[in-house]
Image 1 (cartoon, rainbow, N blue to C red):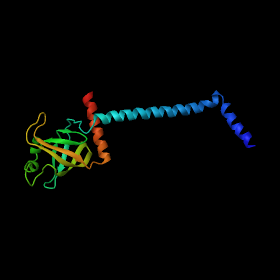
Image 2 (image 1 turned 60 degrees about the vertical axis):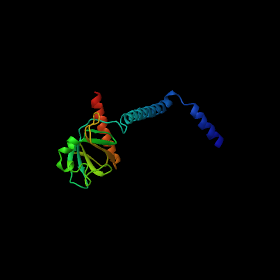
Image 3 (image 1 turned 90 degrees about the horizontal axis):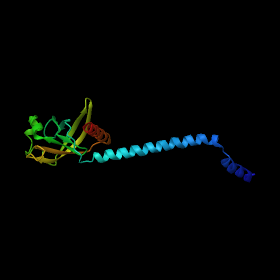
Image 4 (image 1 turned 30 degrees about the horizontal axis):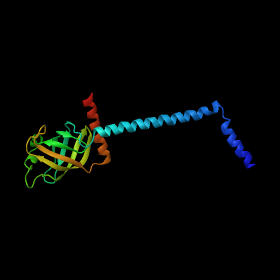
Length: 176
């Protein structure tokens, strides 16, 4: 009896006509289309990641609130920004009397100091992270004016995505 069932099962696989195969064909095409879509999306994501490496800098004037252990918070505008950090010109910092009185002072902000940052990315949207002062530039250097370089640290995955999206949008606007 088991032999009869087995032979019947195998036989039925080969006796399916064209109409019986049609639903299976539609299912196969559906999954193939989904796989192609996934492959294209991954390729596009890879291209976006390549263009926005840590070093890709964007001249994007984003308002930034800085909070330091030494002073209260104050606002500046970023000179340029990347996924890895930002540069703030001294001219922007001079607009805030609290900050300029601290630059280069022993009790003030120095290279290596950690500061809290809030980037205004929209009307009601902020990216919160810590920043590490990695450079204090006392003279103009090429296209860069006097100022400080800040490396972004302790950025949440959500805020990293939001910053990446903002930079992608800016990149697309520049390209158009």
